[in-house]
Length: 457
Ligand SMILES: C[S@@+](CC[C@H](N)C(=O)[O-])C[C@H]1O[C@@H](n2cnc3c(N)ncnc32)[C@H](O)[C@@H]1O
Image 1 (spheres, rainbow, N blue to C red):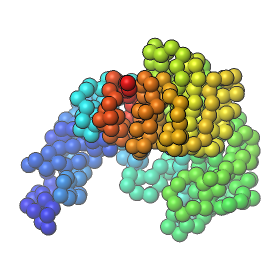
Image 2 (image 1 turned 45 degrees about the horizontal axis):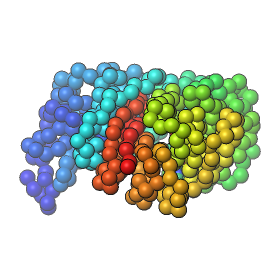
Image 3 (image 1 turned 120 degrees about the vertical axis):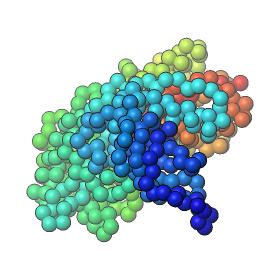
Image 4 (image 1 turned 90 degrees about the vertical axis):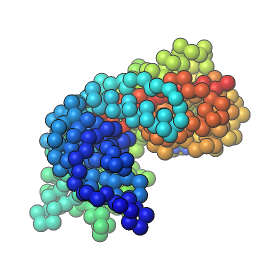
């Protein structure tokens, strides 16, 4: 039936066989040729669903009953699976998760990128529990008893699930958060109310080191100075845990959803933790970009290093979107020179320190926008590494990367859709995609990291 140009399904309760899996983690089925996305459904599930939303192009549905589960379906290991929105793929066995992620990348490459090539199998993560080394919990407070709540939001809401145990994070993070809940309440610390824009404590951020188990805690506050109670809380946290290297305060008086404000001050101890990738040691601060799953990241860094080692002799490498120059530093042993470009000033400062600490002589770091830098650059590079954020690269960056690369581009991406779009542009402008290899970094979520090797000549 068509109402005001919108196709309306006659029946609101349907039985569907799930055929596919979307990049946002929903099962996909067809009913009379109409695409229906089903929350929490997996391919091969036979489900009874209720339509909850529909428009011209598709409908959304929720499961009422799983009539016959997919063979890949398992019982989620987390007690909070149904409440918390963070690990929606826990209902799939790990092997099935990898298969689904491969399909997500493959579909994007074919349908968005227009490329007729097979992607490789997904490299599994070395750890599938206690792997996540960056925790960012928003906080809230109960109205009457003023208990502090901290945890991820329920799906599609800003209601906090008060997480006491999260199996994908190191156990010490649960202990630190619980201590902050208790001590914060004792000190009468108020939590930020998103609607009223009042209250002090906004987020608890923990960076955990998989190298030595140490932790850097940052209390994000709705303030521009350190309130004495926050200082007392920070001191208590620092004294309570042996494995805390430092406690910082971050000032965020914006009304936005941004977690961290611009300024961070270390109140006790040190403002960084150490992490190791292959044989190189890194420093990570509260606001530093660093892969959240370091053991899995090591697989990616090792893969990229091997490719450069096996295909280039003493190459000059450009490491763009460099963060703390992790790629630049890791590949410095197999390169003649590396130039790492990053726009975040605090990351470039930390990168300088890391380069010095690792006694590396051939990596330079430049604080700049990648597109602007490439446009003004006249030097050519044997290989260019692009590792942009989820939105991918803009056309200027891609065009200039093609102009400045003598041999190849290694594109590292955390978003298959923007990777596929950017590969399409590169191919349309003369490049060839040689290989696409996904890596599992964000276990139990539909997210997947991918490395594409591109030949330019
Ligand atoms: C996905 S992270 C990759 C970081 C690093 N390659 C790593 O693996 O640790 C993307 C990085 O690009 C930086 N960035 C974002 N847009 C940028 C731009 N236009 N120019 C330069 N750097 C940018 C971000 O600050 C962030 O550090």
